[in-house]
Length: 143
Image (cartoon, rainbow, N blue to C red; front, side, top):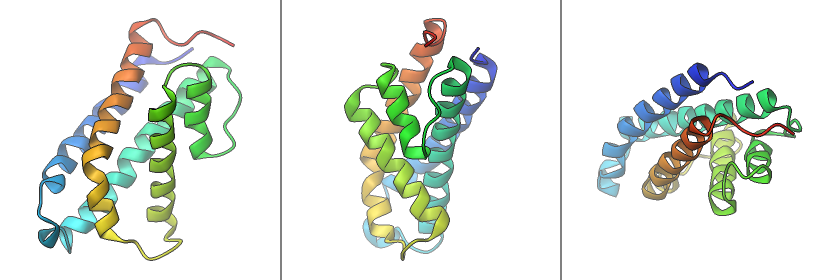
């Protein structure tokens, strides 16, 4: 059974991260460097992790198939109609960005992180709304 308190705490953390990212989104590109870029990296990573943690909790609590990786968690939510396909795809992209930021597979291009913030912030809000609707509806259907 989904623990609504746990999910709401994660949604509150996600909201706080989103609120901290919004001013970074509004910075001119030339000003998004140094400390701002490092803050952006961390906040994107933390936001992604909160979304992943929510997804994994909903999935495990509902008895749905275990995701193969973080990206796949959003596919599982899509398969159970918790997310629409377009949002699920963008959330998979966010999980990929999180992996690049955490594991430093390649040099981080802060320009890409900065340019992703406008759509990314909308996606975080849409994701939070979808999860809140799921909770308000009494949780996901089993199976």
